[in-house]
Image (cartoon, rainbow, N blue to C red; front, top):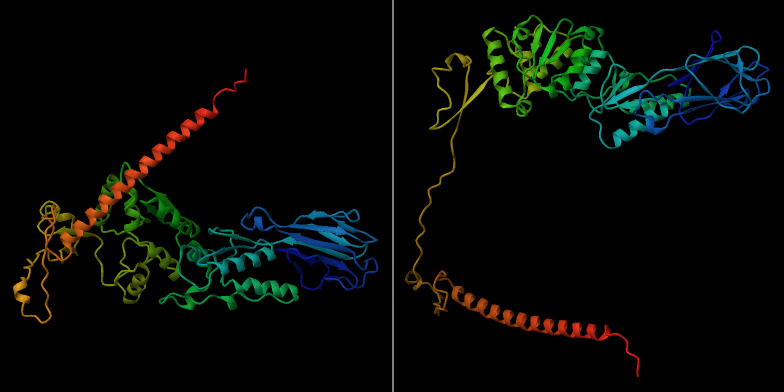
Length: 469
């Protein structure tokens, strides 16, 4: 966002310049009025900010501020006079002097880079229009350069965690519409707190979302180890912003000492992420997890990364030596993010089928966890079919208005079931088929005769012209 700030002591608040609006600097009836300066013309100069919609997502392409002089006594940029009616692009920090006296200003640009989350349809369109008018940018991924996170309601996502770590405000899209209106009316900007979205998480309170600078180093001294590339890409930026280190291990390494090192946090591979791994990778991950369990360590769920940032604590969350389910309140909070019941503590599920042994209990006895969740699959469908005995016509002879039909067999219909219309239907279809075959035969003969006539006609017209003798 471009601003024009007066260098005169005790001057008014700076002018914030909207995109596409011509700001006329002059002595009378202008957007930027300069009083008590006789060298200022009635329409002295024009400032214009241009920011194409195509550059909305290109953070490297900042809006262009141009200055055009239309005065008698001139306009100066860094003590260099501009040519009349010749626009010049300005850079942030340059000094502009209107006239020959003390009307000195400095232009500046402050980035406005917002990231949206959970916005769809009209909400995105409204946000893009407002940010484009303010000369800002909209990104789809969060970086340390972002200034705001825009959400209709607060949900705990990776972008939310990143915004909390960076200490950036989370606002509704209407905040930027209010900012643009304040610029037009030359009023103070609204506070971001007054446009905070409603919290859409049952276990998160308003005080949990307060900006606190200590979140910036929440993961200092910790190394988060990922077995899956998707998890590494999804959670890695949040860990890095919090001062932690990330490491991706997708293949078996020379040793597993890194997993047991102090400060290491092994991220648990979810069910959906583990399905894309190869069989050899799954076996190696299982062996690594068994090694951690033998050392008294545990894996860290994805939800704990967010909980550690929200509660500003790694003593319980993201701590391989602690159990986040030990406290009743914390256990309930963790369950709300993972979607698991708060009483479920088994970390491995072994599945066995009835009448089939999948593993030898004696051989894998030491691999089993202390609390085992056993699932047995049984069929609930009864495949026994009851034999249906047809009812004879004799039983229905006593029924009132019961009619008997005389069946006449048709040749070839012996294999049909003895139902009403069975053999009759066979005869009807046979009759129709014979009529269809006769019609097709006649049609083919007519087409053949027509083809012969056409060939004969072609031969007649292809004969050479013979002149009469």
